[in-house]
Image: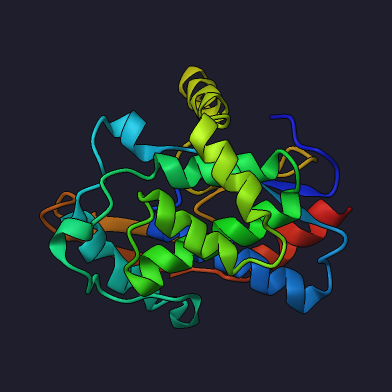
Length: 225
């Protein structure tokens, strides 16, 4: 896996609660360690809906969110409280938005990616919608909203998303969302988490057997070199 020095590559879906937890912990731990200038986050899309050939069922997320949210309540979570018909049917536009911004400013992409996750999980926003994505982007200090709007209208990042999907499909290196890769070859799928499902997803609920947030400090120090 090719990862630039001083970078953590994050393969994930914006609509994945485990990834929301991981991204939150990465940002918070990086700030606590004072490594903001030493380590950047490169978001690589892992579109679950393309792998599964369906949008992630709301029933599955409804079971996951209370469990994952309890591990870091401050990350921004709530049960979906918008109208049923506002539930996102796709995460591709949000993934494309983050990639479009990343092509010009990786730090701006970090900001937008995190804001979109909070908008979905913490504010019940329909981040399938162009206007919602742009409203979220407008609150991000580093994001050029006009440039992003143009990129979304031209579909410039769709090829990037599909290329990453193809890369993950052809390789067994990426195990799911989230999966982190470091320049030294270290990788961690759903870092620090050991879990299982009581009955299959959609019928039961996840159980966290072990949670080690300390792994993020190790990953960030390794990435810093």
